[in-house]
Image 1 (cartoon, helix red, strand yellow):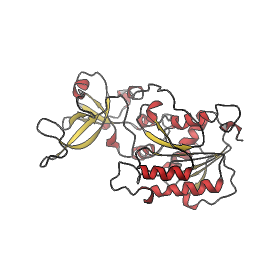
Image 2: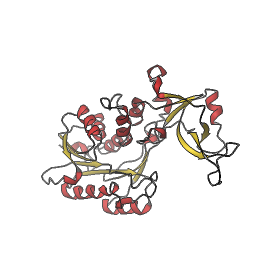
Image 3: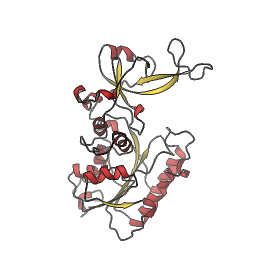
Image 4: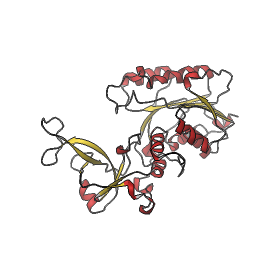
Length: 323
């Protein structure tokens, strides 16, 4: 199989293909982040790096699978004043369309955030020619990560595998103590009203994942976003569904909370949340590991979609027919 991966990042698509034992003849990839490229080359020395998607113009490649997740920064609800597909970064979606029309792949997969405005979603859908499927990585991992996929590979969503946060956490002895912070200066809340988050942690019923945010709280600790005169208080909001938040490039979006302390997720735990082998991103600084993982596909999500393309011996969906 010949693969062209746009916005390749750390080559998670290659790892997904490997996990399914799908042979790859050539894996071409476009990426400009030097640390992501370093991780990619460490794991897959035979990848063929082509540089910036804007410079791609090779019409001679015979591509079986085109895959990519165009930048989401201008589409995501996490960004204020987002410019959508008119933004400098998310506008690179049109490079995916240009290259798709150029190489005419047998199969294609495009991924982006589920929180984009309907207007942009409709534009992408019209350009891709297929309706998107929303796939939450929580079905196949311990991470809540909702993404839209536009693909001509027919697939059904999997049953929930029941993978929880506790299944991916490292033993305490393996966690650098410098990653742990005492939580006395933070107010502990839950992500929905009425939850007994502090009780759950104090009694060591379970370890949770939360995030650090600034909230307006009154003297009773009740959130009052619109009340004038209240200052923002550093707050730890915990999840009670035993899943992590969506990994991002911001470390405070995911912290491990246990009794009177909290800590960052380790790079290995983040690799596990993205369904990658331990140490996949080793070799660069931790800050770059977090960033690269926050920008990556969830490997098991991609593997599930690709597996659906291999599920039949013949027919339009059979990726294994690609030599």
